[in-house]
Length: 319
Image (cartoon, rainbow, N blue to C red; front, side, top):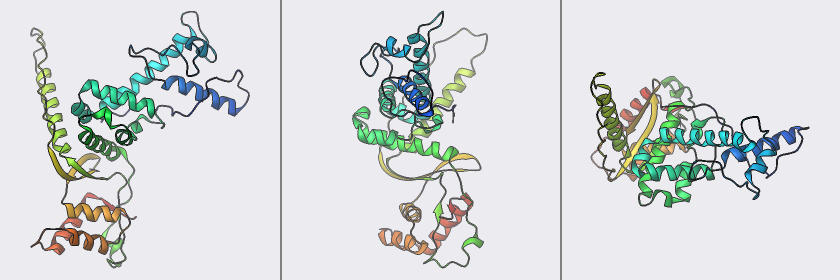
């Protein structure tokens, strides 16, 4: 998964930069004005807007805090940074959300992420966090994903969970010795911070696997062409059918520095969710069993197998 260089965060800004910088407060105000200029959306022709937020010509506003040189005006110098910011953040989201891009189509996806970044510009020192409010935005403005609003939301949640799992923090996993003397009615366990529990309405995991396999096969086919052969038109990649509606309980995690996603049973999902919310081990297990409609299962054996697997994978930690 591609990671990128840090990007400055955005804050609210006044419309005018201070004339002189003689205090930290004035420096912060200049930084806010500069951020506002960088984060302003580009025109449909990918240029800087001609008017500033207060209605003044952008040439005039840029001259407040950017000096011209012998080749470029203040406007032209500022436009370079405005365009580079947008090209960079759009490129990052393009790379981080291939599944959402495939679900919506390239043009609609580009319109979505442009609207998203206009409302929620970068607020972190790293572009890794660019998509941290994309799920929120899709809930607030679902029209950008119409008519596949629910599918797009599932895919956005799934792909963000992979970003979290890729480089999220971790805690020391619990060991048998850590919990040996604690009774089940008092034992509380946490889940690793990098782990995400997703209850989904679409099989987006299968869809993304098929998508990556298709793209990988296409790249291998292109690379296998003989160097001295005549150039041929690039083969059109076959579209992948959108996933069908299906209830999926998914854990997105990492193991040995590799990214994984794993389907689990509804009862296992309920136990992990309850533990993450602070329930005791006894209550988490008993509530999950009581809510299940499955019969003829040796729950003691089944739950032991689940916890053995979760222990090997390192999912459990101290709360």
